[in-house]
Image 1: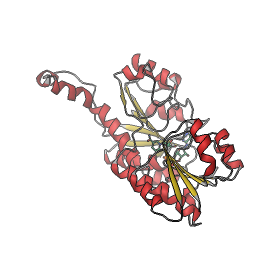
Image 2: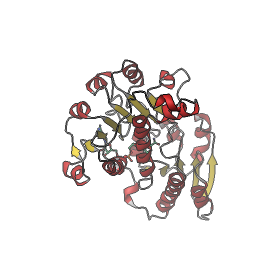
Image 3: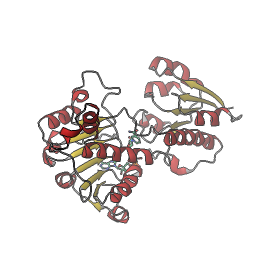
Image 4: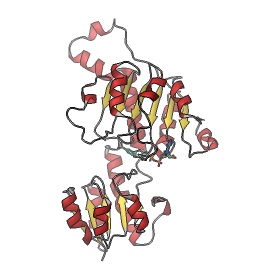
Length: 319
Ligand SMILES: NC(=O)c1ccc[n+]([C@@H]2O[C@H](COP(=O)([O-])OP(=O)(O)OC[C@H]3O[C@@H](n4cnc5c(N)ncnc54)[C@H](O)[C@@H]3O)[C@@H](O)[C@H]2O)c1
């Protein structure tokens, strides 16, 4: 009977799906320290993985391991080179992890463009009247230009929401054909710098890779409009945090929204935590009741289907 490790708790709906399946033996592993993972994981044939880092040293001990089913679509917390070399399959929640992140990006764009935090505080502080006669940096989204960097599952959900707000949508993704972007109502940008110069809003939905690490540095931010805002809900390290703090403080760009950080949780002395020009959330783009339930079910179902030899091939990451 295959043994499945549920590494890091997920929504109960997915746990129940695995626990109620008599073909598997399951154990939830909540201690995500390397010491615990290296001692526990060698006993398992399959792993579902939410948080927790599974490096080559851990994997080398897992002689029975055939599959890792990621709770999510990013997989920078797994040593993929090792998986590829040893033919261990990597599965992702390809169908359930894009609506909530796309809505989260819209929430960050709206939060900044409408000055929500400022207005909320003003009303609570009894400044309702005075706020009416001040000049604000708030702006309409209608006819603004957004550059979506990474036109995958999330990018394609985001474009629909942006078009609903009458925005003009540009997309930069060297791996997606022009005609695909146009079929969604977008305009393909061939050169990232051209897109950065034009856009009022920039949103990142790319994986963290050697190519995307530090994709947005101070030099790139200097190309952007002074009124530009940038949103990163993909992975920390794609925007350089030190550079972002400087760009916001020197008013090189207007604002930012971050759901992800170079180090999670961020250190208390991370200057961005004190920067009023950035809106923050705790890697929470999928934290809706619907998304967490659906992701947990898909994570569990993927691993069940894998062992039943019934898996939809689109769930397997091509390594
Ligand atoms: N904050 C969260 O909770 C959360 C939730 C879901 C996904 N994510 C992150 O968002 C990322 C995107 O998710 P997705 O489901 O849209 O992934 P996806 O794989 O469907 O799309 C990613 C797109 O990025 C493109 N891309 C790759 N390298 C690029 C580059 N150098 N420049 C421009 N485009 C490039 C790819 O061609 C692809 O179209 C994930 O990799 C994950 O890290 C974060």
